[in-house]
Length: 118
Image 1 (cartoon, rainbow, N blue to C red):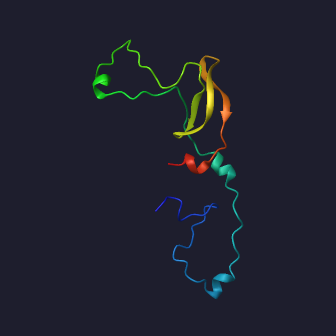
Image 2: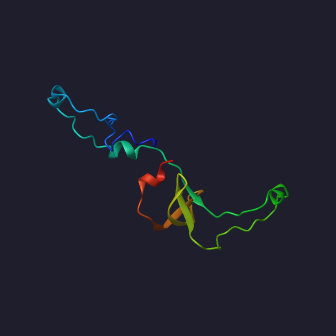
Image 3: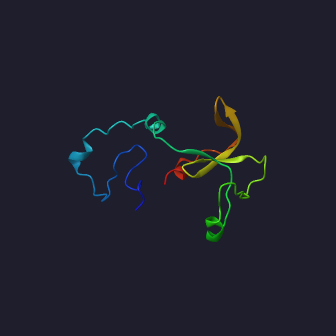
């Protein structure tokens, strides 16, 4: 069972057994729909900028030493992947923001919130 199977988008528990409602239950006023957008905005996510990756053997891995250089699968100057919780949401380039690295978004996909949940 998926984590969200028992909940609708308003965060209200669904009636799992789907038993017919009794006449007394029909007279109870329904709760107003909740606006979850403010709540969802507060959920922390991890944003990363992926420079690239390399597939290497374990034998090569144990031979890595200080000063070793590994070639990655991205071309120099190519936009890097922006990831949220491991899902690619766009492309960016590295910039310096004050004393830290930053990113300048060059392409942003439509955010699919379902893809961002584990």
